Length: 137
Image (cartoon, rainbow, N blue to C red; front, side):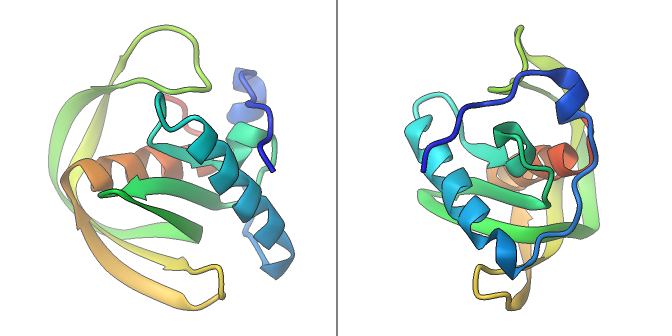
């Protein structure tokens, strides 16, 4: 189900709590909402649809991916960039990101995975994990 977007910075700044199997419907709703905004958005976190759970969805090189409880376990190649956010009004804002990140997460089948991401995909994941941590750019 496509859900309305949250734009309130106070709500978006709340730290998310771990997701469980009871949150799989939220994961599906998040993905549906992301796909409905695909022309303007490449990633979303659950708090962007009003649910403070550690769930993100994003475009991973043309394929949509969902992560429950994502955690960056290593990073390298810091750089400065500018990003926009569908939930925040205004133009792009400066932020620092890493070129390469290693992420641990759970799949929708609740299986733990670890994978290294680079470039644009790594940047998207970092932005969405920031949302889970209550960090706004």
